[in-house]
Image 1 (cartoon, helix red, strand yellow):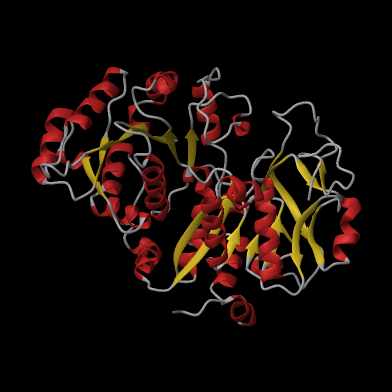
Image 2 (image 1 turned 45 degrees about the vertical axis):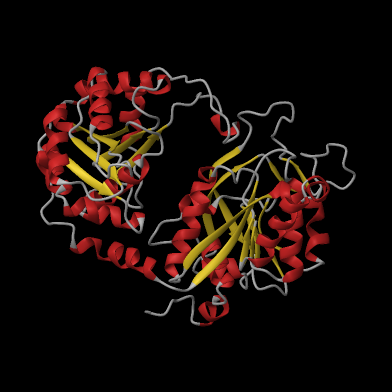
Length: 485
């Protein structure tokens, strides 16, 4: 097993995730079996219940090294074969107190697995102040020095910069960071993040890994990345499709990173440029009209002007009424849409539409979710979502929820044209809903964005984009096939 650790310095959000994904992509395109691990310096007890706006105290479990080695060998491909390479993204910034225990763990880990099986990529920033226009290397030098002081020596230094790295700057980083110039990789801003794998491959990253980790690669991956090049070229399109994302955490868009990527994957597949209109769901509520009328009207203007509407999940009471307002508007105006007063928000409700799962202890918030991959059985053959999935009988998707639709109201809803076309294996939990006489009104209990991929977009999101662009019916009539163009 080969391990590639990706660390970051200077600033947070430097692009470690994109680098890790891109490295995995080009290695996988070479025919290697690749898996990935993301480590975030968060408390390890049900961190999923934290608000995205919160920062938490670090805590690390014992024996993280053994856990990494065990997790890296779990098959991730359909053939069930053990991976050959594990790409590990270590969250945070080198020097932060939160990541210190993890860096120490990997300092020891590199000796446990031996040097020929361990490689460190350090992602750093090369700023270019507008006052001078000169690319500055000092932040990268300091970051690498700090990393070395903690016991890790970078094999590749990937420099994020606004413009291509000048040769003199590259040589300077090489000299003062103790690496060869070939080990300094320029990752300049590009029009699409899907160009990054091509950028890395052009600079000989695959060749370096072959030599450094003794990888069994016989051919260059350039020809195997043809689909990626075609996909990244689609960003030069003129047609546009707008989606209103109505949520609780829209001030921090990274809170919806998976959702945004799923939308982008689907937009690329139909050759459209995506415009996301972020709307705080609380701004759509009547209280906002009284307190901040300008904000209220601006929010509704965004919603009404969008081609489609997406309401992602969220916990707690705040903003819930605004989400319901958006859903109601999408239903009445026949706007393409993807996602009642419930016991979660009002335990004394006389008409609970959404209720606790039977196994949930309402007195305890953490550790009580229905998590992981679960099977959903399609109950009808004429379901739009079933056709988008390829007319399959069932799908396996990831879940993360604590509440569900009250099954006692199933017949009441279906009598009004609101059909539960997908249910769990026992037929007790409602998983997918579709509305009659509507271009696309779909709600799912699971999180389809987690399995969306650039070349294989998530079907529920793909359907939303198709409907928003006015192409859904044409796509269905063609047997769920896109035209070559």
